[in-house]
Image (tube, rainbow, N blue to C red; front, top):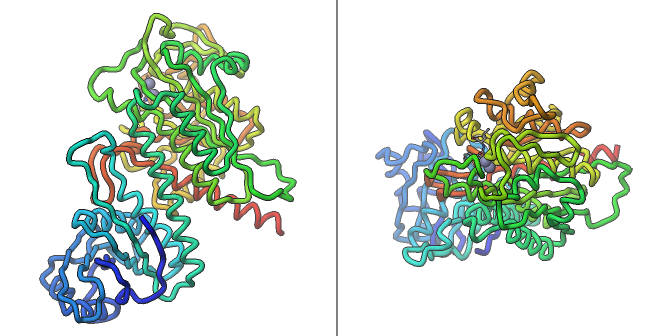
Length: 508
Ligand code: BES
Ligand code: ZN
Ligand code: ZN
């Protein structure tokens, strides 16, 4: 799909359909809607007056125009976006996703979206492009029949009066970020048989080569050398070897910064989680192909960062493994030794994510990371606590946590902080080793984070549990069901914001 911004009038644009945001309670005989109503031969007024559409978020009305009244397009889609004062990034993105999904469903090939944002229109255009690209993703890769084959070939985002250069730069950023989110979703959607740790490393290598990141992939021999006994205890039951993917983005010009700050993004990459010897029940086990969503989020975010080129370096690390039972698999009761030297009693082999992350966090530190954000489909408990609405965020550095939450708010992704008091760490004390890998039934999301905290000392650290939010069980008007790519947009925005504040601080 070709995407472009336009600062001209939406009425003149040569597309098949125009999608326009309508606020709750708006009238067709004044302001913007009056102009639209005139151009649509009075149809907008009739739709609003009949209360077919009141502007509530998610409402839509699709109109055929006879032409000759001023609007070049012959189809008009009105989309309710709720109250004007509540018009957020999330509503903008969702409006765009809804528009493209409906209009693709009508077999249209060229469309324009009129988001009607008055301040920082260029930034809003980026959000619209992100939402549109995310909206068009379909998880039907392996279908041979009834596949969604229709394509929107051209999308124009209309921001009247906006500066063209700024607008088109933002539109391009939106394309980069939207495609990165869909890249993450494609990986998360791949069955375990098609995306082993080796395949995942291969996909990361392609990204690194295409967009200019450096890459190192640790094999099991190197992990053994480095003493990564926690990670290796997870891959032991599988015939597929574990891989630790290490991507690095270095800004294109030599930085004058004396700053030695280094951010690392670390993501759980379990390409299939059967639970191991502590085997999961069969029901819904097929979903455990998405247990590498954290790793896919890291690779997706790095893919976007490589193209946006912020002036700060970023590390991206994905410890990848399968978790399977076999005659060689780690057993409950076994004790393993992490890279840091800490001994871990394995109570439940299904709590494997924290084991691979423990060694990845330790490894990030050896590479010089001073701030670490890890992300993982870590606990079923997070769905009980926060459902599919909020990502759980926990950590040791309140500034870092607040920055992630703010970065999320700006792009319409929600995070909710859970507490991480030291009392919770009592739950992971072991009788025979330093710690154990489960903390009992209570506060499962928190005790998983308390486990990771043992490996994150000495750095600013935040942890995202995306188990409840990385998979959508149901389709929504603005996106398909399946992998959501949650947190890619937040992390990219986090890095961009961080680069701005750090550069600002340097110039002072
Ligand atoms: N990958 C799962 C967590 C998960 C569950 C993700 C459901 C998405 C949906 C993780 O490895 C796991 O099995 N965690 C256990 C931990 C328990 C054994 C302490 C869990 O949450 O049940
Ligand atoms: Zn598990
Ligand atoms: Zn898992």
